[in-house]
Amino acid sequence: MARKSNPILSYLRHSSGQARVRVDGRDILPGEYNSKESRVRYAEIVAQVVSGQAVETPTAKRSKPVESDSRLTVNELVAAYLSWADGHYLKNGKPTSEIHCLKSAVKPLVDLFGFTACDAFGPVALKAVREQMIGACCGTIAGRTD
Image 1 (cartoon, helix red, strand yellow):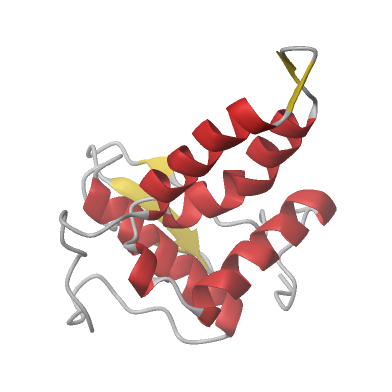
Image 2 (image 1 turned 180 degrees about the horizontal axis):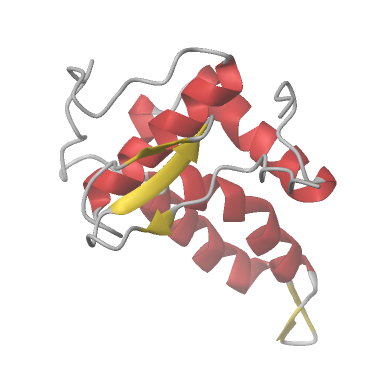
């Protein structure tokens, strides 16, 4: 019996040194593994899959350039928030379990859109994060049937 495909899109390393994302049985190479550009492209691919759009091929023109380094990224915002939370969620001078809950809650956001500029994060991206959370909990991406 054939193994079911993993419904959660994984960010993997291709043998060529490129990042690899498998969508509907085909590999997409969004760029050099673990580079900012490949992480941004991976987030775009996840957002497209979650919203039901056709995934752009690597040769297709991108609709927007990679975000500028001068803008606040999701990673930077989350790091600032967690730094604040470390000093806020204390009991008897020690961090409470709320810190662990916060880190778990922002993990899908950071994994998908960490290198995205905050002002470029919109409703489609939020839906992708929500669907990733559901998929991590339930083992699927809602709306996908493989």
